[in-house]
Image 1: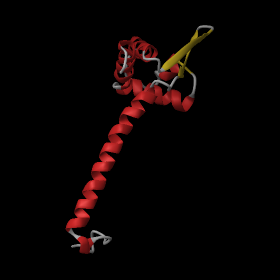
Image 2: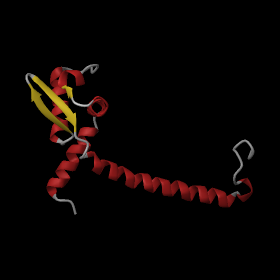
Image 3: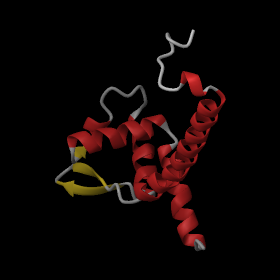
Image 4: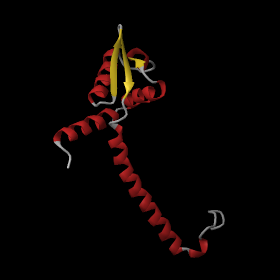
Length: 123
């Protein structure tokens, strides 16, 4: 059973990745590596304060680390907390895969003569 602090961490991660702008920031960090905040905000239609808020949400969720180099704040991805998200999604992927397999078996049992034929051949 999850502890209250674990549940809070999970909520923070799911809340952080729910926003498309934050997912875009994570994508950039995954592909570009460590980057300054201003570079992460390039191409966004939001203000610097909005970018700062997004980065704070990502930090609070444990999805990014920040270090200072002179006046620059350099951000790096910490994908560890996304493992729980991947495991949760995997549960539903297995669920739907099983459902689709069952549907395929049902359809095959209803039309044994059509098995293996292309859709054009069954018309």
